[in-house]
Image (tube, rainbow over all chains, first blue to last red; front, side, top):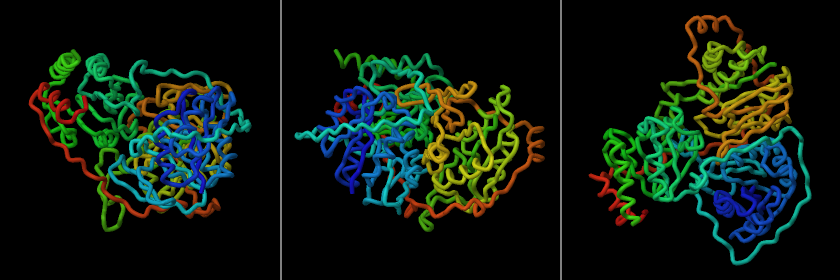
Length: 314
Length: 249
């Protein structure tokens, strides 16, 4: 029962999300093969080849695959799936965009964002924003699955190196064209892979006030996140959003500032190792999941936290 | 140009759902139901395109029980022109929804199909992508901006690191993300007007689709509960605990 993992990479290395998907794939079936598609991405293929659990790497280098557009990548995958029983990807925006298109062409359902592998056909996944966990069973021979990355460990570096095989398949239905990409964030780590996250909610009152959180985040080497309420209020862009409809995160430390703790936000962060909540409303539901709750006005508490952290750094 | 907007009736997003251990499912009795919020954004976007003079007709389609007509009626009150109701007992899995939608589009051509990126009940995030595959057309998921050119759509998408802009050939399937727009409230005169608009009924049996699901739900459980509730008195106390007790800073 062979399994193919669609990799995401920056041409040099695999994204951590993919290494988590590789761990999940190893629990579903073997051998695990990884597809690295893109342009000038041989280094990423090398990284895949030296990841534990990977037995073979397929390298498809072509300008059509450079921006991971759904139409050409899904055509490539449909072709490759003649040889595989499973197709797996991390539930990143690329994975979620591409895999259902492949599933429909294979006439199978997709099993989205699994958090547990029961057996080769049975999986657990959250529904209703994580307020219920469904155990689902597939009845088809081929299966297409996305992985909720916070539920699986990152695959380690392997001592041996897997074979890399270049594939010359060139697919492009010509339905889509890349125009541009604007990547924000700069120096800070990405939300989904950050070890510490400082998030703000409606209590921040404005986008400008997020500077308070940025200063704390800089001292902790943390990413900055937000609740849906803060995004809806226009304080910060949508890619900051932590929650069921945004990003699902599970850092070592999650600091929620001025966030009340709506169900949909909790679904996106409740698996964090340590949760800190700062809120002036002591009835806020965020305190029910917080390990350390501080009932205080954030406009006093956050600058104080900033100063304390500065002391520690010295 | 004609736009099709599929909408789903789901548990209202403000409702805290309850798992019924006896029936092994989420208890939907006496629970407030609403249009899926991402679908509402899709309806709004179609209406804005029409108001901009670039669309002639907006058709709203919903699959589900009799009450799904109310969801269609909501969209008609917002400003859509006509409805199609495909009567099914339960809500079918995304692949079946996509197949039914593809059959409807086979009978009546659309230039643009706008869907919500996911429904907030099963959280699958699949239907739009699957529909594009069955139609063999382009797909633009997680749209935060849609511009219409002569024979193409320029779509800005919310991706993990930021924003991506792509150009898609017509016809296209697009799915909405939160920041695309803020849906309007239906005005009373428009709610009255919507009552006169047509909703055609379609029997799924007439579409000749094998309705057997490929994935079945065996069990639904409550998630494990996180025990929190710990408090600190001051920032000094907090920093001390993070450093010396939890060891995370």
